[in-house]
Length: 492
Image (cartoon, rainbow, N blue to C red; front, side):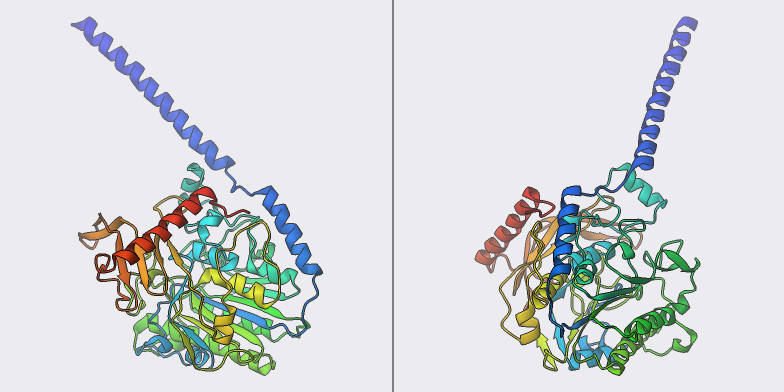
């Protein structure tokens, strides 16, 4: 008996030693990945990008090119503006843009979440192309370590991706950014690396720590930054840039951190709206738009400045998605269908509205065409040139808009849905099926077909009523999936 116990004890000791050895090897392996990880850059296409930007700099361009101001809010909902039906929040300046310009009823951000939405908007490519479809975490954050340990494809925007500010800077524009970047916190993925002459803002969302405000690559306001001051700090930086004596066209990217949570307002804005703290913040954002428009008017350049106001995705815990189903992080309409106002008095007639589907990926190819600049020769731009429709009210092209979802821990969630002018097809996937406030379960449901003209809330599957349309949309979906599989980065 004693011999048996001794043998068992020795055996357990050996097993424990083996388990400890394997655990140590596992820990060391992941530690090595974390310490040696670096987001990969494609040297071949980075060189092609360099040649493309050099070519832009050599082109002769028109002296009367319009200025561009891109205003991007964070988590602003479709129903949060007066121009889109809000009654508890007053947005007179944004409503003025709508009254004097174009309001899109069916505009879609490239993604239902911050980082990937910005990547798609500034590249003209769906964020799957950039391998960047999750929120970028600060260097050293536990989630950033986890992504490194998984050999994540990217934790910052890749060097070879061509961003709108790089294009406009090469084409001779003065460029500035104010606000939230969220595409990487180290070179070569910082704002000054990517086409901006000047930068003041935050590298991340305002719920991430340490939250500081940078000027260029140096901290201007130490963490933790008092976010009740953000409105004033951002407004002053934007107006300062607009009031400079520019001897060339300019591009201002004003990417506010609000109304992303946590919400803050200056004392003078307390209680100004009928929608609580959230409404106070949105009304403050509207003030900032008014100051930008006023600065352009004082300089005498409002007539020939393209001013765009939109959101990176739908609302999160507060805010209104309007009549749309879903919210941020979801590929239901409420996650990606957001306000889009376009103001350009020199070209756009007042009071126009359009119900044509338009995507955030359309911005880059539309501006390239407008400015008579060539497309990059080595990559696919997923967006369309929508200039004739947006600027001149020509009939919209027939096209598809694609909805890419998220995964819990990796980069890229794959294609969830596709829509055309009327119908939207959802693949079979997990949909919240119930539970409690703290716990919910998903059940596989679908595929579904929704008639968005009759049912923007995506409440009733009409696949049996329209079997031919169901087959057509399913084929379009599967065709895009195959295209992504065959050429995930979209290189030519």
